[in-house]
Image (cartoon, rainbow, N blue to C red; front, side):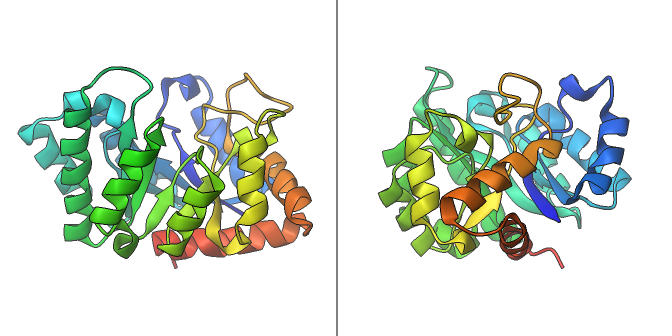
Length: 255
Protein backbone atom coordinates (compact mmCIF):
# COMPACT_ATOMS: atom_id res chain seq x y z
CA UNK A 1 0.00 0.00 0.00
CA UNK A 2 1.30 3.46 -0.97
CA UNK A 3 0.99 6.76 0.90
CA UNK A 4 0.83 9.63 -1.60
CA UNK A 5 2.18 12.60 0.36
CA UNK A 6 1.77 15.41 -2.21
CA UNK A 7 -1.03 15.66 -4.77
CA UNK A 8 -3.12 18.49 -6.22
CA UNK A 9 -6.47 16.87 -7.05
CA UNK A 10 -8.13 20.28 -6.77
CA UNK A 11 -6.39 21.23 -10.04
CA UNK A 12 -8.72 21.96 -12.95
CA UNK A 13 -6.96 19.34 -15.07
CA UNK A 14 -9.00 16.77 -13.15
CA UNK A 15 -12.35 18.47 -13.70
CA UNK A 16 -13.38 15.95 -16.36
CA UNK A 17 -12.75 12.74 -14.42
CA UNK A 18 -11.84 13.61 -10.82
CA UNK A 19 -14.39 11.35 -9.14
CA UNK A 20 -13.62 8.36 -11.36
CA UNK A 21 -9.88 8.75 -10.91
CA UNK A 22 -10.06 9.10 -7.12
CA UNK A 23 -12.44 6.13 -6.94
CA UNK A 24 -9.81 3.99 -8.70
CA UNK A 25 -6.93 4.79 -6.34
CA UNK A 26 -7.59 2.30 -3.54
CA UNK A 27 -8.05 -0.59 -6.00
CA UNK A 28 -4.62 0.27 -7.40
CA UNK A 29 -2.75 0.24 -4.12
CA UNK A 30 -2.97 3.90 -3.11
CA UNK A 31 -4.01 3.73 0.54
CA UNK A 32 -3.75 7.35 1.67
CA UNK A 33 -3.53 10.66 -0.20
CA UNK A 34 -2.54 14.09 1.07
CA UNK A 35 -3.93 16.90 -1.06
CA UNK A 36 -1.60 19.88 -0.82
CA UNK A 37 -2.89 23.45 -1.11
CA UNK A 38 -0.84 25.97 -3.05
CA UNK A 39 -3.00 29.06 -3.64
CA UNK A 40 -5.43 31.09 -1.57
CA UNK A 41 -8.27 30.03 -3.86
CA UNK A 42 -7.74 26.27 -3.66
CA UNK A 43 -7.51 25.86 0.11
CA UNK A 44 -11.31 25.59 0.32
CA UNK A 45 -11.20 22.94 -2.42
CA UNK A 46 -8.78 20.91 -0.33
CA UNK A 47 -11.26 21.03 2.54
CA UNK A 48 -14.00 19.76 0.21
CA UNK A 49 -11.83 16.82 -0.89
CA UNK A 50 -10.82 15.73 2.61
CA UNK A 51 -14.41 15.88 3.77
CA UNK A 52 -15.62 13.85 0.78
CA UNK A 53 -13.01 11.06 0.80
CA UNK A 54 -12.16 9.12 3.93
CA UNK A 55 -8.61 8.28 2.79
CA UNK A 56 -7.76 11.90 1.94
CA UNK A 57 -5.95 14.31 4.24
CA UNK A 58 -4.87 17.83 3.39
CA UNK A 59 -2.55 20.75 3.95
CA UNK A 60 -3.26 24.47 4.05
CA UNK A 61 -0.71 26.95 2.76
CA UNK A 62 0.36 29.21 -0.08
CA UNK A 63 3.15 28.33 -2.51
CA UNK A 64 5.84 31.03 -2.67
CA UNK A 65 4.94 31.95 -6.26
CA UNK A 66 1.44 32.92 -5.09
CA UNK A 67 2.33 34.77 -1.88
CA UNK A 68 1.61 38.04 -3.66
CA UNK A 69 -2.08 37.12 -3.27
CA UNK A 70 -1.85 37.03 0.52
CA UNK A 71 -3.15 39.75 2.82
CA UNK A 72 -4.26 39.86 6.44
CA UNK A 73 -7.89 39.07 5.61
CA UNK A 74 -7.36 35.98 3.49
CA UNK A 75 -4.53 34.76 5.69
CA UNK A 76 -6.89 34.86 8.67
CA UNK A 77 -9.28 32.64 6.69
CA UNK A 78 -6.47 30.16 5.96
CA UNK A 79 -5.56 30.11 9.65
CA UNK A 80 -9.11 29.00 10.45
CA UNK A 81 -9.14 26.34 7.70
CA UNK A 82 -5.87 24.95 9.06
CA UNK A 83 -7.64 23.97 12.28
CA UNK A 84 -9.70 21.31 10.48
CA UNK A 85 -9.15 17.87 12.03
CA UNK A 86 -7.97 16.36 8.72
CA UNK A 87 -5.44 19.10 7.95
CA UNK A 88 -2.12 17.46 8.70
CA UNK A 89 0.43 20.13 7.70
CA UNK A 90 1.04 23.72 6.63
CA UNK A 91 2.15 23.89 3.02
CA UNK A 92 3.30 24.12 0.51
CA UNK A 93 5.45 27.03 1.65
CA UNK A 94 8.97 28.23 0.99
CA UNK A 95 10.96 29.95 -1.76
CA UNK A 96 10.76 29.83 -5.56
CA UNK A 97 13.33 31.93 -7.39
CA UNK A 98 12.71 30.49 -10.87
CA UNK A 99 10.68 33.60 -11.74
CA UNK A 100 11.35 37.17 -10.63
CA UNK A 101 7.97 37.61 -8.91
CA UNK A 102 6.88 37.93 -6.25
CA UNK A 103 9.89 39.67 -4.73
CA UNK A 104 12.12 37.61 -2.48
CA UNK A 105 11.20 39.82 0.47
CA UNK A 106 7.50 39.00 -0.03
CA UNK A 107 8.22 35.29 -0.27
CA UNK A 108 10.30 35.44 2.91
CA UNK A 109 7.67 37.37 4.86
CA UNK A 110 4.95 34.84 4.13
CA UNK A 111 7.23 31.84 4.53
CA UNK A 112 7.99 33.03 8.06
CA UNK A 113 4.34 33.85 8.79
CA UNK A 114 3.27 30.38 7.68
CA UNK A 115 6.02 28.75 9.71
CA UNK A 116 4.68 30.63 12.72
CA UNK A 117 1.21 29.29 11.99
CA UNK A 118 2.59 25.75 11.86
CA UNK A 119 4.29 26.30 15.19
CA UNK A 120 1.10 27.71 16.71
CA UNK A 121 -0.98 24.74 15.53
CA UNK A 122 1.79 22.21 16.21
CA UNK A 123 1.75 20.98 12.61
CA UNK A 124 4.57 19.83 10.33
CA UNK A 125 5.37 21.72 7.12
CA UNK A 126 5.62 20.97 3.41
CA UNK A 127 8.57 22.94 2.04
CA UNK A 128 8.77 24.04 -1.59
CA UNK A 129 12.21 25.19 -2.70
CA UNK A 130 13.25 25.93 -6.27
CA UNK A 131 16.58 27.54 -7.16
CA UNK A 132 16.78 28.79 -3.57
CA UNK A 133 19.01 26.26 -1.85
CA UNK A 134 20.98 28.65 0.36
CA UNK A 135 18.04 30.79 1.51
CA UNK A 136 15.92 27.72 2.22
CA UNK A 137 18.63 26.11 4.32
CA UNK A 138 19.19 29.38 6.21
CA UNK A 139 15.52 29.72 7.17
CA UNK A 140 15.11 26.05 8.05
CA UNK A 141 18.14 26.22 10.33
CA UNK A 142 17.43 29.62 11.91
CA UNK A 143 13.73 28.86 12.45
CA UNK A 144 14.42 25.35 13.78
CA UNK A 145 12.02 23.83 11.27
CA UNK A 146 13.29 20.39 12.19
CA UNK A 147 11.43 20.80 15.49
CA UNK A 148 8.17 21.15 13.54
CA UNK A 149 8.87 18.20 11.26
CA UNK A 150 7.84 17.87 7.65
CA UNK A 151 9.22 17.33 4.18
CA UNK A 152 11.37 19.09 1.61
CA UNK A 153 9.11 18.30 -1.32
CA UNK A 154 10.20 17.59 -4.90
CA UNK A 155 13.81 17.57 -3.75
CA UNK A 156 16.28 18.98 -6.30
CA UNK A 157 19.45 19.86 -4.42
CA UNK A 158 22.70 18.17 -3.37
CA UNK A 159 23.38 15.00 -1.43
CA UNK A 160 25.01 17.13 1.27
CA UNK A 161 21.90 19.28 1.76
CA UNK A 162 19.70 16.18 1.80
CA UNK A 163 21.86 14.70 4.56
CA UNK A 164 21.55 17.94 6.53
CA UNK A 165 17.78 18.01 6.22
CA UNK A 166 17.52 14.35 7.19
CA UNK A 167 19.75 14.96 10.22
CA UNK A 168 17.20 17.58 11.37
CA UNK A 169 14.44 14.98 11.15
CA UNK A 170 12.93 16.26 7.91
CA UNK A 171 11.88 13.89 5.15
CA UNK A 172 12.86 14.12 1.49
CA UNK A 173 10.00 13.96 -1.04
CA UNK A 174 10.75 11.78 -4.06
CA UNK A 175 8.55 11.64 -7.15
CA UNK A 176 8.54 11.07 -10.88
CA UNK A 177 11.68 13.10 -11.62
CA UNK A 178 13.67 10.18 -10.18
CA UNK A 179 12.78 8.12 -13.28
CA UNK A 180 14.15 10.71 -15.73
CA UNK A 181 17.40 9.80 -17.50
CA UNK A 182 18.95 13.16 -16.59
CA UNK A 183 18.14 12.84 -12.86
CA UNK A 184 21.65 11.73 -11.91
CA UNK A 185 21.87 13.99 -8.86
CA UNK A 186 18.51 12.87 -7.47
CA UNK A 187 19.42 9.21 -7.99
CA UNK A 188 22.58 9.86 -5.96
CA UNK A 189 20.47 11.41 -3.18
CA UNK A 190 18.22 8.33 -3.05
CA UNK A 191 21.22 6.03 -3.05
CA UNK A 192 22.82 7.95 -0.18
CA UNK A 193 19.80 8.47 2.09
CA UNK A 194 18.37 5.78 4.33
CA UNK A 195 14.95 4.66 3.16
CA UNK A 196 13.66 5.89 6.52
CA UNK A 197 14.20 9.49 5.33
CA UNK A 198 12.17 9.21 2.12
CA UNK A 199 8.48 9.74 1.38
CA UNK A 200 6.65 9.19 -1.92
CA UNK A 201 4.90 11.97 -3.82
CA UNK A 202 3.69 12.85 -7.28
CA UNK A 203 3.08 16.63 -7.27
CA UNK A 204 0.32 15.60 -9.69
CA UNK A 205 -0.81 16.75 -12.17
CA UNK A 206 2.84 17.69 -12.70
CA UNK A 207 6.05 15.66 -13.18
CA UNK A 208 4.71 12.34 -14.42
CA UNK A 209 7.34 9.57 -14.35
CA UNK A 210 8.75 7.69 -17.31
CA UNK A 211 7.07 6.11 -19.32
CA UNK A 212 4.35 8.77 -18.92
CA UNK A 213 6.61 11.82 -18.87
CA UNK A 214 4.80 14.86 -20.26
CA UNK A 215 1.34 13.47 -19.52
CA UNK A 216 -1.00 14.48 -16.72
CA UNK A 217 0.33 12.79 -13.60
CA UNK A 218 -1.67 10.95 -10.94
CA UNK A 219 -1.06 8.78 -7.90
CA UNK A 220 -1.62 5.74 -10.14
CA UNK A 221 1.90 6.28 -11.48
CA UNK A 222 3.64 6.06 -8.10
CA UNK A 223 4.62 2.38 -8.62
CA UNK A 224 7.12 3.57 -11.24
CA UNK A 225 8.78 5.70 -8.55
CA UNK A 226 8.69 2.78 -6.10
CA UNK A 227 10.36 0.51 -8.64
CA UNK A 228 13.15 3.01 -9.32
CA UNK A 229 13.83 3.53 -5.60
CA UNK A 230 13.89 -0.26 -5.13
CA UNK A 231 16.36 -0.63 -8.01
CA UNK A 232 18.67 2.07 -6.68
CA UNK A 233 18.55 0.81 -3.08
CA UNK A 234 18.73 -2.90 -3.95
CA UNK A 235 15.57 -3.75 -2.00
CA UNK A 236 12.11 -5.00 -2.91
CA UNK A 237 9.30 -2.74 -4.06
CA UNK A 238 7.27 -4.07 -1.14
CA UNK A 239 9.89 -2.85 1.32
CA UNK A 240 9.92 0.61 -0.30
CA UNK A 241 6.14 0.82 0.00
CA UNK A 242 6.08 -0.37 3.62
CA UNK A 243 8.87 1.87 4.90
CA UNK A 244 7.73 5.01 3.08
CA UNK A 245 4.13 4.40 4.21
CA UNK A 246 5.26 4.33 7.84
CA UNK A 247 7.46 7.40 7.24
CA UNK A 248 4.50 9.35 5.86
CA UNK A 249 2.22 8.31 8.73
CA UNK A 250 4.87 9.47 11.18
CA UNK A 251 5.50 12.74 9.33
CA UNK A 252 1.82 13.70 9.04
CA UNK A 253 0.92 12.11 12.39
CA UNK A 254 -1.80 10.01 10.83
CA UNK A 255 -2.88 6.94 12.81
